[in-house]
Image 1 (tube, rainbow, N blue to C red):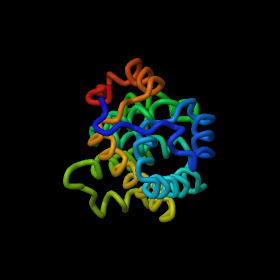
Image 2: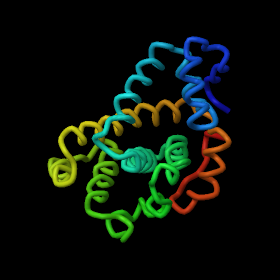
Image 3: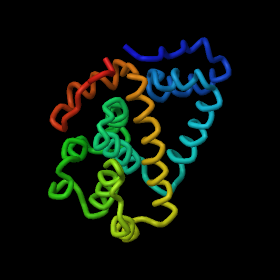
Length: 195
């Protein structure tokens, strides 16, 4: 049971266009969105961050999904990990990459570019963060500085959402829940407080 109930879609008519677009894209509206909507300015700010981080041409969509999924899973945020894994294959991220994320240093499904990315995600997820100069230097071998800014922004954005959903015990919607229950147990995914 969520600690703070999400609003109903009808409670936020000022976001009707956004809700319609999310329905068209996902087939549902995330409960996190409807809880954030209790503070419309916060939801609006999160929306602007999403626009800045999910749509620039600096990084391809599968990489964005991999960053969000890996950082969330390494952080122990099951709500966000389920969301990012669900639909990832449709956007070009192979399921075997999701399933091998904990073994990224040795798994043959990853190349050196992805290993550098996943190392950053793992180290950033640790408390306190353990990102070192060498982690960013390695990323520079594979990504532009503008792309590294987007990658870092995605990690920071997901850090906020991960904590938000864990504190709120946001109920995971049926579609990502089914996907995660069927596909992510092998990487340690559990529903936890999000049921």
